[in-house]
Amino acid sequence: MKRYTGTIPAAYTPCLPNGDLDLAPIPAMARMFAEQKCPAAFVCGSTGESHSFTTDERKAVAAAWKKHAPAGLDVIVHVGHNCQREAMALAAHAKEIGAAAVSALAPSYFKPATPKDLVDFLRPIAAAAGTLPFYFYDIPSMTNVVFPADRVMKLAAEAIPNFVGLKYTSSDLMRLQSCLAFEGGKYEVLFGTDEILLATLALGIKGGVGSTYNYASPVYRRIYDAVARGDHDTARREQLKTVRLVEVLLEHGVLRTGKAIMSLIGHDCGPIRPPFAPVGKEELAEIRRKLAPLDIFVSPIS
Figure 1: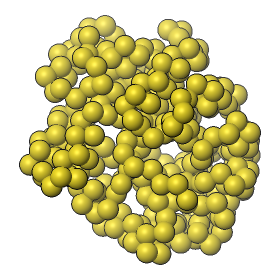
Figure 2: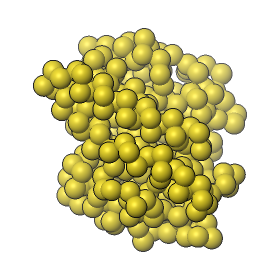
Figure 3: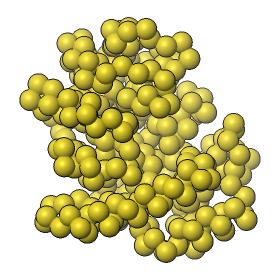
């Protein structure tokens, strides 16, 4: 089984000024990820506003990423949906286009009552992807489906033949250790809370999927490199820069601000879709002023 190391950007889904889907920026974004030595792109996830796009739009986005991804940049497609059959259609499409893997989160309107109910919901979705690796995307802060992730892993390992691990987006580091230790580390855990990456490297995390990796992957590479050479003081200083970044994101709204930051590095992804409000020019100038001193971006912000 292939295992990922380093930074996997959770890609933004570009839109035109009127909110329509815009596939044109994807080739340049894919080249940027490849130039930044990212092993994969995670598309149509939370950062990609998956629940704000139609199934056909999501298929178009996934196909565009697969078409334009340079050699060495895998495409992992998030196929989660509140409707199981829509998720199955997305998973089957990911298989058809030759994606590297699929992932799905828990349904978040009508919620599963038990971990078994959750795995029963996920099983047909994973099956629709054929033999593609399947990751359960655990993000309880968004789904409000709060089950012990290691318990879900155990049930998924028994019921889903192509289950390979988790996209784990939680600050519960005690539970993370249990997930990493499950069956002697047989299953992969990709970490998804960017601002505490350093703490998880000490626990054994090797790679992660994150929204800030779109535009700030250099600072995370410096964290990985510093840890590898035992320079923990440098690693802590670099991680603190990401904390300062996330503080700005939280102040202005994480998803809308992150998408707006893409325009500051030359990859305009357009406005966010409702119910969020787009970032206006004056607010964007304020965000730029706050972030400019951090020295963390893939290119100088303009």
